[in-house]
Image (cartoon, rainbow, N blue to C red):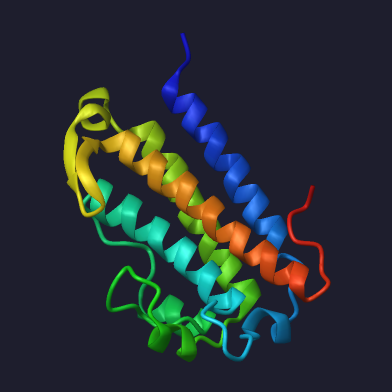
Length: 172
């Protein structure tokens, strides 16, 4: 029988590791470049959204505690506080990301997610919660669906933008 917690932890470790490889070599111009006339956001906004959403989903919605992201981290990373979980154009336009500082925050989020998976009791993991994205789901399934799938989707956007700029997108 597959241990779902171990499986989810493995999937997230691979997801987080791959995301960090994708963003590791991005220079500031590429990080903030937005193609005129396109509807795609710049890489900094996409990356910031993916990580802050995981923080909000895991710490806020799933665990019911304050997310890690706060005004001090916002000032240090150059990523402003969000008013909603959506990736809004006005928020994205304000981002002047300090990539090394934001990656430090991302590492804290990834560690908190891993810790949450191991600390949830079976009853907490299996508890069905209401989600803003559709039908109620067991807490740990919702956490897995949103953190893994959501992150890979945005990682694909980042890789595509890097590819358009002539850079290697995904590390494999």
